[in-house]
Length: 232
Figure 1 (spheres, one colour):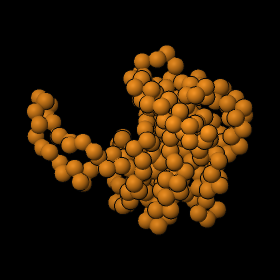
Figure 2 (cartoon, one colour):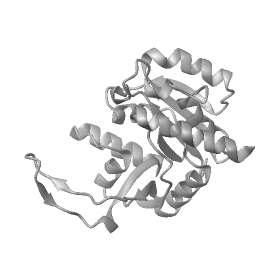
Figure 3 (cartoon, one colour):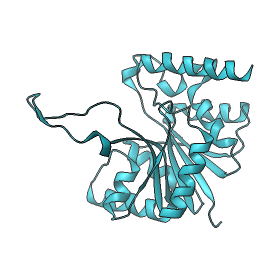
């Protein structure tokens, strides 16, 4: 379908920095697993045709059950991931049949639908787009001995988030080229950039955090409570 959009939600990480027995994407936030909060945002958008959830082999059964219980009708498949995030994304891409695709971290539950729409619109206009926010802090480049070697201009630095949106054929090609070269990137836009494709920035929100540490979960509870107050 022309200009159709599919979404790969990557949720196969172990997240040792959370220091919990449970994987961070399945911890409860306001009595609901974090991953469900994330999936619901995309599932409720008319823009999205289909969603593939990529998770750990041992988590597939409960994720499939949650998809049914929470009536996430656009989640067409729940599949096991690979050894690296990059491999997990590629496996998800192979299950999507749309012209355009977004890749999103399962542990970013506070993504704003308006920013999803803006990222998609920019990708359709420019070919590829990612959400990002300007860096607030001064950044230092440090060498192996812990000595500062450079201070990049903060005005040119952005912290990259997800979702990231691409033409499906471009992202598949970028993944396959990286795989053939033995290259592992830190995000999908890095793979596309390697192919000489320009990626546009769309300004997102500082609340679109990736839940990585126990402190992040505390902040997430605060955000959820604030959202609840806004509805009352």
